[in-house]
Amino acid sequence: MFVHALNPTILQLGPFEIRWYGLMYVLAFFVTFYYVRSAIRAGKLSITEKDLDQLLGWMIIGMIIGARTFYALFYNPLYFLSDPIKFFFVWEGGLSFHGGLLGVVLVGWYFAKKK
Image 1: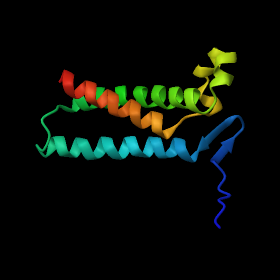
Image 2: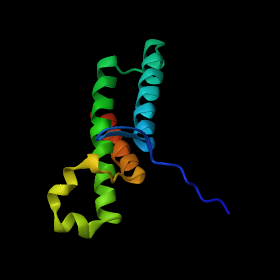
Image 3: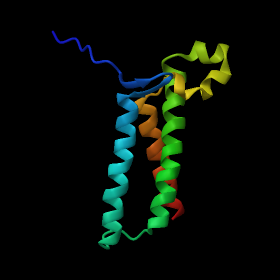
Image 4: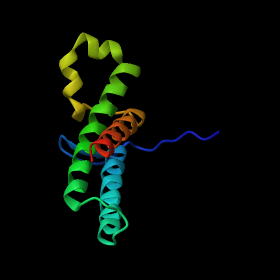
């Protein structure tokens, strides 16, 4: 039986810490940005680089809102109902990959419909 003992924090400098899931979100957006930008420059996609910048900006917002909302609703609803302002304290942790994915998909769908 495998039990992971991976520390979720990569680096901590005083109150500032970098966590693995945060690093993965950032890496995913950078890889996506450079891949899609190269496809635009090669003529494989018919959107502009400005559209790409707008899309990824909105996707970051959708990812954070979706991840936090999903976490609040499905993992710890009583905590957030007792102190709703804590919903906005994302630096205290509590993001869900499933909600982040849903947020990105919804923003991407809306953007595609709009453009």
